Length: 129
Image 1 (cartoon, rainbow, N blue to C red):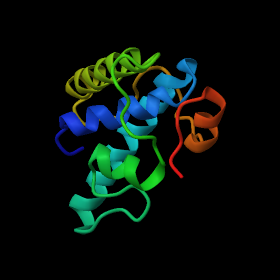
Image 2 (image 1 turned 180 degrees about the vertical axis):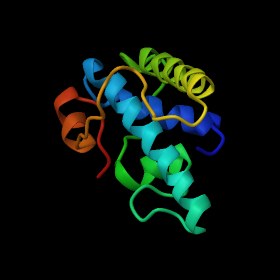
Image 3 (image 1 turned 90 degrees about the vertical axis):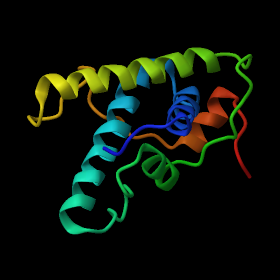
Image 4 (image 1 turned 90 degrees about the horizontal axis):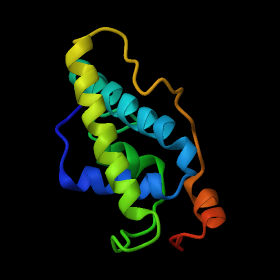
């Protein structure tokens, strides 16, 4: 997976903010595994993956989810989502060092696919037009 930036952390936090808290681990796993797979695809074939992007977290999220703009940290649940995103990224890095190339397994959770727009409507966070 390509290097992570503050923008990636923000995007992951915004994504987590829009899904039920019980699904955060699965969503983190989905994002990081697919961004990593897209980066391997890009390195091997010399072009971005059609659905998962160029191997960056921002590329994967941008191609697959329509997120609300970043809220203030005081927005209900957002700071918790940001901390969970940071913890998930740190756990990912730690698992990659331990496995160093073996099968990808993190969080003891299967990837879960969601329609973020529908979840945002249910949760009450703002959705883009």
